[in-house]
Image (cartoon, rainbow, N blue to C red; front, side):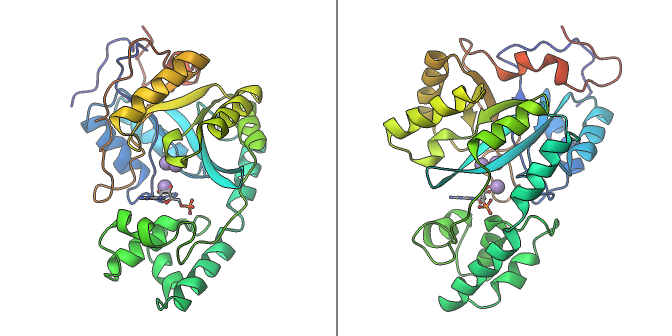
Length: 301
Ligand code: AMP
Ligand code: MN
Ligand code: MN
Ligand code: MN
């Protein structure tokens, strides 16, 4: 596609894709490949949001701008809340902010020990060699993830696909699950805000919280300065998109949209192919105008 030179209009109908992963965390494609693919698929505003890591942002931004694609720096922070893992996406962050960088470094710490414990459990369940097997898929040695173990289990023919892995392994109560303490909600929201960004609750339907507990999560998140929720994501069914549209409207939260793309082979939704945000919502990108990196010569409408 030819890069657009028209002023960028930050409407609800914008084809923004503000959630995806590169080889810097647990995606299978490089930041440059993702920029090209987002551009080819008609994405009009793109963010890279690797897990607990901003090491791919400079490459992603350079590649996006060279293609004429407006870009937001992002990150997806793993937190522990009510003994469960929750993900908080930060959008429009300054990826060089020292408190954010140090907080993420600490959050990543412990992944290797956790991975060794996961492998020991899998060995006990009759699957040896999982640590080395998972490492084979890891690009960033600081970020060994359950996704890398999942790829190993599929490669070995132990599971048929990623969904099958997380159904039988690596989740609570199943072999290979090792509980882990991530950052706190307060830290994640604080780091994101301190770095000039907006905090967004990622794919809320994925956590399976009962309604009262989900209310408590949203209340605490807002009280700490969190402002957004992912309404349209590759992790939500159409009904779930409606449910979180209603929550965003009722709680005056900014709405985000992102595929959570990890891999052309594994991801259900491709970059830039999500349904649009409901026109009644306030898109998070409208509050991020000053944080968008624009290609040379391009202006905001
Ligand atoms: P970790 O951060 O190491 O706990 O790994 C979590 C990652 O595993 C998520 O970001 C997803 O990429 C992947 N994952 C978790 N649950 C599933 C699932 N049910 N299906 C596919 N991928 C999953
Ligand atoms: Mn992931
Ligand atoms: Mn996530
Ligand atoms: Mn994600």
